[in-house]
Image 1 (cartoon, rainbow, N blue to C red):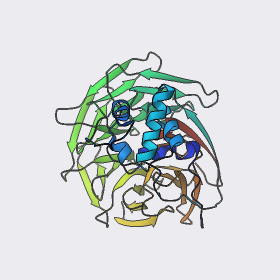
Image 2 (cartoon, rainbow, N blue to C red; image 1 turned 180 degrees about the horizontal axis):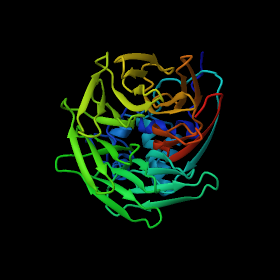
Image 3 (cartoon, rainbow, N blue to C red; image 1 turned 180 degrees about the vertical axis):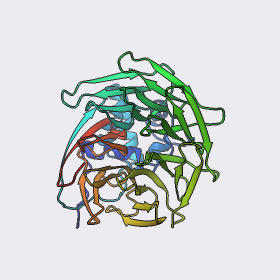
Image 4 (tube, rainbow, N blue to C red; image 1 turned 90 degrees about the vertical axis):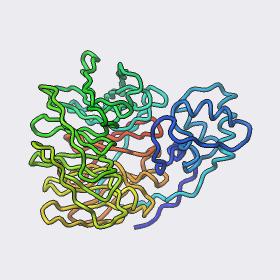
Length: 416
């Protein structure tokens, strides 16, 4: 294993850093922030705060002048003089800070990256969807759209959502090709018919908010997590919805997957827990992880139904065996501050992204050999909040902070 030198802070590779992965306030206008005095302060406050909290600037890893200019150029088109004023101000008051280095580890797999900038500036693609027809969908959270990319032709189409400020977040496809999404900044789960563009909304019960990540089980039942300490279930044929609160209070159900027996598993990003759901009764069972500081964020399941998770707070890849109730942890190559995030199982290995190293990395972990392999994400990653495998084993990624989606084509000895 060798540590790669920190790449020069030039061009797109570091653009994601301006929206630092460590900043947890992702919604619009969160947290009042006092910006430093100087020429450009008012322009920053009036321009940047329209779409996101200024804490996403103050809490970022900083950037160069050119880096800032290219970054906000992916969000909004500004006159040259205004772009010059804002980039000069940001570079002066929020220069590049030291950040965890990308650690490159060689291994048996080969990957290639294809990346596309999505049409709407400032979309902040949150989750990707590897669709059955080979297309990549994304949730344009800040642009209030869903998008579809044909990787073969590069053709893209966006579907505006009827309800303003829905904040589309998680995506999943049903067997007939409808695209289901969680309206994270609103209080509903939606279903988009790509043929007509029509959206059906399924409102959440009173007191339940922040629908987060959806997943279908083998019977076509939709399960989803919420930021308000609940998990939900929708029967698509009837529209019936049932929501259950977690046994512990103050929880933040986040990533969710369904195992081979039809049992949903999810992780609690606000506590050191992985949980299972009884699909019939919706009763939740909590399993406490050994470290009180663990904050699992996303989850993947292997064919043996073992639960794998990214411990965002501590920089670990975790393994929980539901049969033995035992946990194992593997330090992520980028270290304690690497902030592992989006994760998936594909071709016999666990894949995830380190969201805080500069630039972001794609990490492969072989459960049999317990060895890591890593790659730098060419455009920088922009914080890969989620990833999803295609049926052929390739991966769809959303590169949130740099307004891109990506396809990772994998060649290695493993199976799908």
